[in-house]
Length: 435
Image (cartoon, rainbow, N blue to C red; front, side):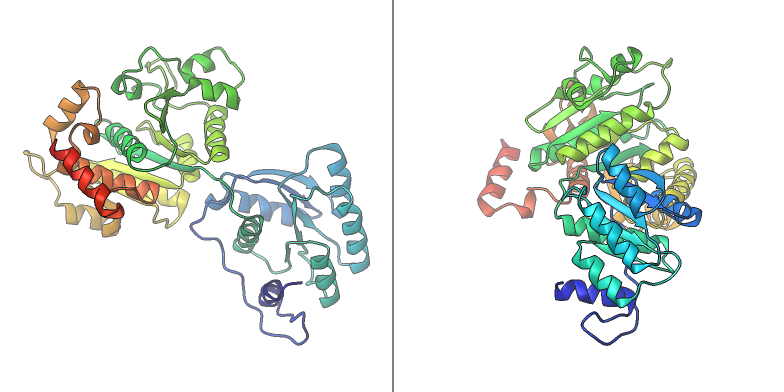
């Protein structure tokens, strides 16, 4: 056993495996992290443990994981492996008898796939020092014992994810307007173009507004095949079909379109949403959702799965009241996450601000780094739309374009743009703006 693993066990258990003891210290939860889309099989002997794991499953960090449950212990887990595919992570509640646990682990190792990581749990009593040594020698990744809370389960899952190594995981950003007409779709579409222009990321812009979506119109793709066609025909949705539905805009940006109609439901069906997210995860893509301005259970579930949420509002009293309710609902789903950005669109328009922007952000409880102000520039966005381009493509140096490029950098975790570029490339970019 490595010294690092021994220290981790000592911190969790208070038992020094090299001899001696130390005070127990709780493992830190994986706060603010979205765990990779692992398949988890939970095998538990007691209802209390099953209930605790089901509560953990609802945590935002676990929103992309798929969970299966089975009643039983290590012996039943072995039989289950013989009948179905092995998961990425196996969570098993074990008995107190050390000899029986070791015998069952040895049996399980005969059918266990090498990629599967095992986390043991004992909700009744801490394991003794000999059992801890032996189970870790057999390849067990983590051992949870009473009293363990939801945060410790998430911490253990995070440790296992780190042990597996870097997982190519997509990043989901949801764009939502506090009401219709505030410009959320324009923001989402411009950010998608900016990321594709100034980074190496592969970007998917998915239009989820089945009633009034504008992605197809603004990218001149109204004749393209849409996800709506597939759903009407009740065709099975798989990766091959999803790839065929993509409409390429440039080398790195692809669109996933719907056919807007007031006869459609406001949201896509859950299987279609899950298929889109799973495909982006497996390919490590940047996935941007242009969402309808509808707040319901489906909206909350989608926002819980997102890595980043961008809320667009105008600095008016009506938008302030709606944004306040939206953020309250969002915090109920995601907790005190800082991966939320407010876009104050049409900032300092000619009609003036009904609410000063400082008062606006203070009332919403947002930090200065969580607010992006996009100046009002009706001429820029109108001319860009008429020319079939985004504002960034039409006039990159405009103040509104620069604000949206800054938002794209926040969403993408950085861009190859501005000060991030070498001097020669910065000069070339400046010359392109002039010419």
